[in-house]
Length: 328
Image (tube, rainbow, N blue to C red; front, side):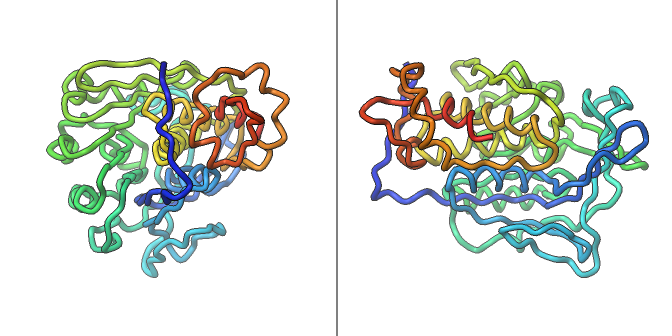
């Protein structure tokens, strides 16, 4: 049975570095603007880690036109505009991009350079660019200063045509392939996984492939495992994979083993698709859900995560992820 790796109260939460630009997201349907929100993988991931009480440093760039309040200030580039994405939900499948929407980058901020990263060590690093802002040399610097680096493949294989429409290139042609043996985890959606040789990449690093409503699969050199999904009423898929990665890393920081951390990732992904923009997580509601204990009795997933979140187990273990489900 999958168990947790407990942490004691005397062990501090490990440090995380998030690298990726904030964006302005514009959602369109039927030619009309449905919503304008804060975007970028960094925004969704930082939202999840904040909800899980995980401390982190965020390196992100925006232009002088950046218009959203955030808890972690980005680097403001006076000569640049903030990256802007338009998501069209009624244009069908766009060649090799996203089946559920067509993404267009209509403005682009400056890339993140190695010199923009802090001069210190981190336990975990997360390379989560969305608009081509992470350079090979920047990822190489992250590998040098972080003990374990997690990469969303969209940071590596996204390309943009003359109209800004998102395209995908094969991982071997991305300019990042030589760095794979130095990574710990590579996350990809099922669509993005078609642009790499999973059987080859899994020999160098752990590969996590998300399947939306069908959960995810974890591949490593000697095995693989399917992780169960959570049901969700999908409204907007934007940021679901980002929230998954935030929950996954957050679970690992709290001491969970990989399969349990992936389950936490599935949970946060399911919460995100039920919202337009960033979902709000109120984990204080956990302590009011003790009536679920009879249903959840016997689960071993709680461990250190429940302790960190302040769940009162009344002598019986709770499934922390199922309890979190009621924090929408």
